[in-house]
Length: 169
Image (tube, rainbow, N blue to C red):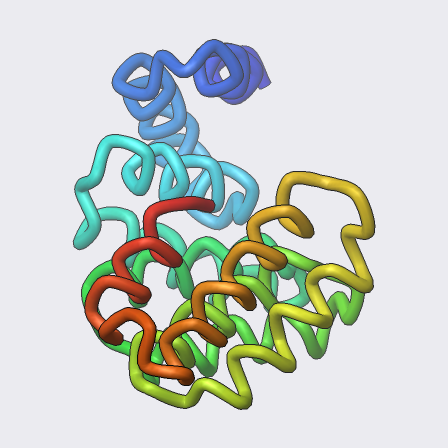
């Protein structure tokens, strides 16, 4: 408990290396503790060590298939690594477990906009707005819809639009 709580405290303070060190100690003692894998994988995501993030997030899912955050974070990692088919599966699984998880819809929308599925991306951005109403995710989704509509009307090229859309959350 001590090392887990310390790891969580470091994670919350954005001291990801210290969090990784303490959570690794937890797993040396208790190798089936899914929460430690989840936070450890997320810490590696935060420091952009994506292969480690994948490894620990997969372990988190192995030991607890019902936590949408594991799927959400693994979807984010897979998306960054351009493993879009895998990322789509992870975001869809997060939505299946937690249908009101706006971040999962946002992750899917960003992938669909990246791979040129504009209509699906727009539908998902609208779902983000519906779920998040006035939050940061909704504001981001509204801007993304405008950018995609500009792209569709050929006011900007798709590469510029995608870069602007993917530059946030």
